[in-house]
Length: 181
Ligand SMILES: Cc1cc2nc3c(=O)[nH]c(=O)nc-3n(C[C@H](O)[C@H](O)[C@H](O)COP(=O)(O)O)c2cc1C
Image 1 (cartoon, rainbow, N blue to C red):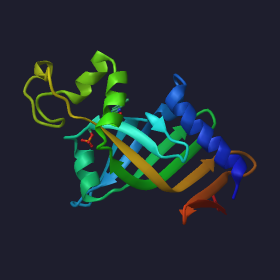
Image 2 (image 1 turned 180 degrees about the vertical axis):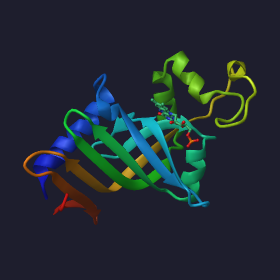
Image 3 (image 1 turned 90 degrees about the vertical axis):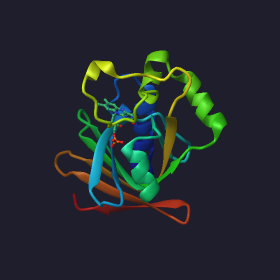
Image 4 (image 1 turned 45 degrees about the horizontal axis):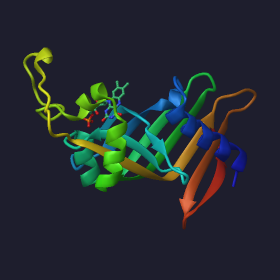
């Protein structure tokens, strides 16, 4: 197991949550539902647990939630432009249902941010006037998705040779292999 790079990538992911302006604050999340068309979107990384489970916030009515219910295998893509580091994560997504956890996170969201989870119509619904979006006063569709990684691929572009490492979780422990970049 290559622990030096593992520690580096774990730290960078954690910094993505806590450090303002860190490029890992945003990642691209891919899901594939029953219609088998990969769907990508930018999301904010909200939490990284001790064992590297990653959490995001979203609206329960969004297409990504429908996809996760149909197929919980998802991918996340992170890119650090200054360090020329790319991290690809494959994992199993779960939708948080514990009301206490949801309430704890909901209470941390500022009023402006809460609007993302309180539109009267579901996200992605057709609307004639973009200024006419209505918001619910007393209800919300806030939810959290937690991704448990089973494969993490690290790639650093550098001279004289790039570095590519694959980490795989097998029987609850991680092992690593170098790959041809
Ligand atoms: C900078 C940025 C950050 C975003 N963060 C989130 C997020 O944390 N959660 C989320 O559900 N959507 C987020 N979005 C919107 C998604 O990219 C996407 O448009 C939306 O979630 C609908 O995706 P879906 O229909 O595939 O579910 C963000 C968009 C941008 C541009």
